[in-house]
Image (cartoon, rainbow, N blue to C red):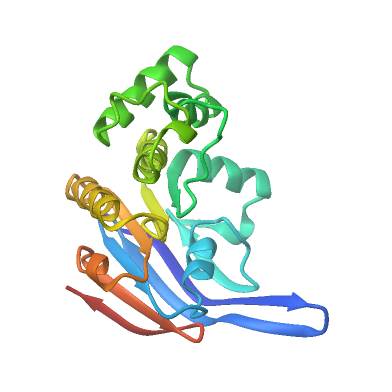
Length: 226
């Protein structure tokens, strides 16, 4: 089953009179249960591409269909609700709320989905235990290492069981040991059936994916299964 179908995706940024063409007519599809690594040199369009297909940004033109829904016809409110309920996100800067504990950071999005506080906290604790942070429930981000903060963000992304997990350079700010821990965690959740689309510049970590897409100058130059 195809979860994402993209046709002729174009993204152009306007800065005064200058136009920068970042994505130049990309066709792409993602099936259920895939683990896809998106690679390319700096400026190739990797993160911009992921932001379009994950509904975090609007393309200039082209068609994006996610779970049989044409996103062009969705309102901003519908997209927000769709992201909250169906998709999960992991960013390189962790994006945790600094004044909330680990369990609060994971529970808040669950409560935004309509779960009771009690239910949200139970599910948040389960997610944190899944990523090996059962001993960090009450710690603030400032009291955790970078690797622990990233694992908290992964717990937050996975707690509501998203259909697709998007990760943008999830190991970029981590040391080698923490990076390996994060990637092993990604492998484990993929082995359990989770669909993952990950932007990375690390060849070593791309080898854990089952499919590698390489971008250059806003176009896909290779798409290989491994």
